[in-house]
Image (tube, rainbow, N blue to C red; front, side, top):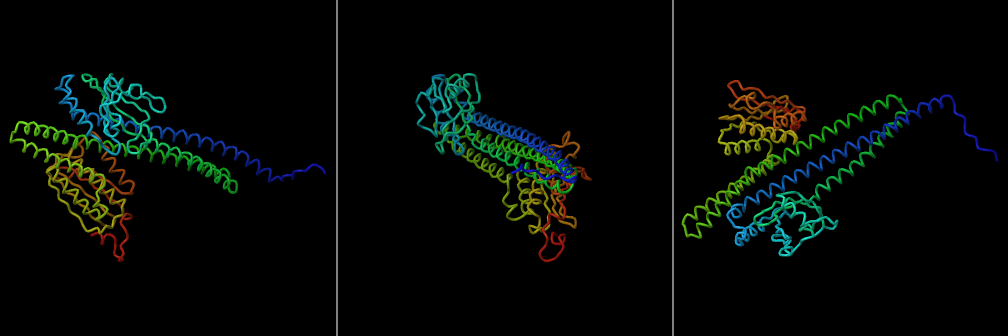
Length: 470
């Protein structure tokens, strides 16, 4: 049999091959470059996210240890280095300070003996000098070295109290040099590592998806117009990457700001209240020991402080997500917000509304409620106002939230727009609405947020949206 001969290509087929081969090479090169660039960008974003979360955990641990130190600093400051009674009281205080599912404080003396481990009591009283984790990382000796230096962070593998499984823990430790103690607490990093793993898996899926899209677009371009298809693909890819990067940054900024706000609320409010309660209880204990009848008043003061702390907890949880917004709608939620603001600040608030009947969609309701929160917070912190007027109403173009105060005008509240005002603008922008901040005619500030008609649900009885909103 003779050798097999390949079919001879026609002129048109040769032109098609000549046009297709450079296109395929170019598309392949672009696909590789886009995948590499996407992987590098996503890797940087994941690393930045991981670093930001770990930094947040570090600040959280530092705050926990500072709160714990505040709880016994008076005892420590007034005690001698060999005051065993004072040491016992401090260990009892720290043993009672557990939080969350796995949170607790530990204490080692500089000889390596464990003094406090409320969730792992089998550690107490034993010498753990030279202890290492499963990877050979020193544990006790390193914690003691950091305590001798004053303070520091240390990561290692440790058994989680709730599950008994080994997990990575980040600890922060301080030293009490007079007592030769290392005191600290830790937080497990499973959630951070899990989020990073999910992000890396999503990165791999995204890279595979990009290859599939490029392959599909290339096939379509071969059948239509090679040059036009390639141009559209590159342009759309760049737009998608830019939007993804902007969205990721905005999500990270929002999460970090919310963490800062909650941490600030806890530190400035609840932690100070709890410290005050502790001092009142200590005073009551001393008065009781003396048989002084004033002890009852000190206990009553501590109970009042506890009530105030509970109120702060309710207020913080309500600020995170008020249930009345989902259950009853925007009007009742705003009324509750205004009443709470008036009670807290003493600034009279006039609230006016029409019956919306839950006609706003959930995005618009949430955005307008958060804008009202930001505006009232701004009034409380910066406006020095004596009264506030809040009004929500519907009209033929949509719905408008108007907040007016008689305090300092917008030009006198700061050097530039803060994060709160930027959040307002971004929320309204996402709804294709409009936000204006103007001086009030008689002095003060008027903030108006308007959402378009597309965010009001269509009426079921055939009436107009504006009429149903009134």
